[in-house]
Image (tube, rainbow, N blue to C red; front, side, top):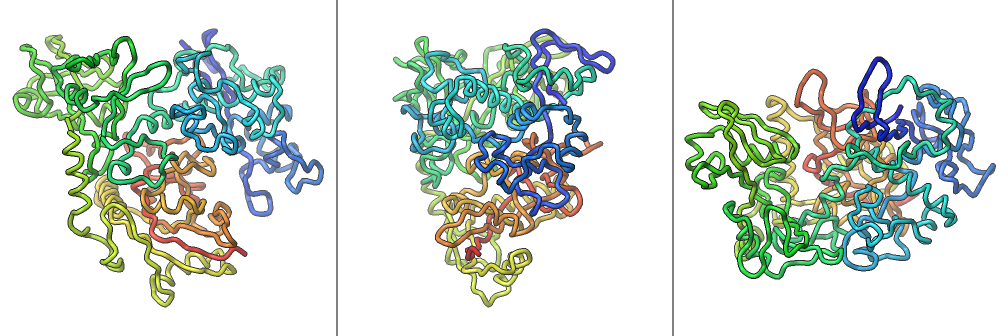
Length: 624
């Protein structure tokens, strides 16, 4: 199976005809089993030493994990995938670029900030790779003048446990580029090419390398990759008073819901009068800001330098009670040159059926889309790329603008103060302690061992870990997260025709250092990292405590597990490429709520939307 992205591909018969610029990358669903044959029955993954695949196993024939690629189990899987004729080196290369658990991640903190090592605080001990993310994505704008590394340095190669040979270094760079391209096009099915035989592959030892060195435009990453989107999003928790991620947060820490910057000598610098620029930008009639600092809003430039606006997430992407999200307003320009908001004022007489929220939701879903809508008497087509709308009957074209609603520093301060001193939360569980209900943080309450609540959580844990002694069970009381969880439940029930949504208590094992962050901000795989992506790129939860125990980090002879209440809803089997649940068959526009390891009696659940999760309990137990 290959991922083929032609610049101008044409299908014909059973083969695919591609242009000379086509990039072909080998893909496979096969992964290396993380558990080994003793712990994994009816395994659908390759039983082989992961370090052997990476070329770093020190034990050789004495290794307890198999080094036999051609074992009966592995051969069966390879034949099923059509990979039985690959040489060992070729198979390993294929696995390295598809199995995201085999190689370390690129350091996200290194790729932001102004220091020599970005914002990474551990330049010599960091376990992630210090290399330019945009270089790996083939969209670095600075080329040789980039202050980030465009090759693996000694420390990176040490992490990879390889010598610093030029060939090996280049090989790993190509592997990481292909990993990104595969994940970037995760939603697109790979194409089977009948004319390509295994014999052809064996003549090319570097299977993952592109047939042509130039990546066609169709393969360029979209403007909104997860890492890039987070690095340009302002953290709502920091504005409200504090973020427990601190300098490790993937989002920008700033006290205002917007931030204006200009690019000077490869570094983004803040404007000193950001609020004045914002005030001018919020007026759709303004093409530039006022005063001595004239920012061109159409081209986003200032004196020949690039300009960008960072902001909090759009209000349509968050529950309605979230404060200081960005409220985007959509305007169209009438024949008199006046900017009119959709769905308001004079527009009610003309458009009526379309509002700023409607347009914002459609725009965020696909910024390259063309939206068709009707008023009482006319039909229009709105082009998001060109930012104009056209009357389909008369051909009249009107300009369109998307600008935020202005928020002053004074209003920000007032909203934060109002939330912190607001009334006590309502609609909380009856068994919560009413005296421990902070507004936008949390309290940990020890659950008494003689209560039904304690016995409920204990029985879930002891079902698969009967020999481990529990030290303490704590309840997480976070009214803000609970409110969002209930809101999400209502949304899912509405989509489900009013029927109840399935929810389960599931386990999650992690590093104790993330305890405070999860209790305050919930699980977020984009910020907290991930142990694997076998069934999708989300937060992983297990039915059995024994499974999550493998990922719980020990500290002083103790381990910790979260017991989360999860809205699993309707689920289906996931794959490593999924960044969201897939659509349901024969139901256009309706998606599953979560992904699992198997359709019948699943034991692993992948949740992509963190509002479906409430981290309700923490179990501290003794490590056997």
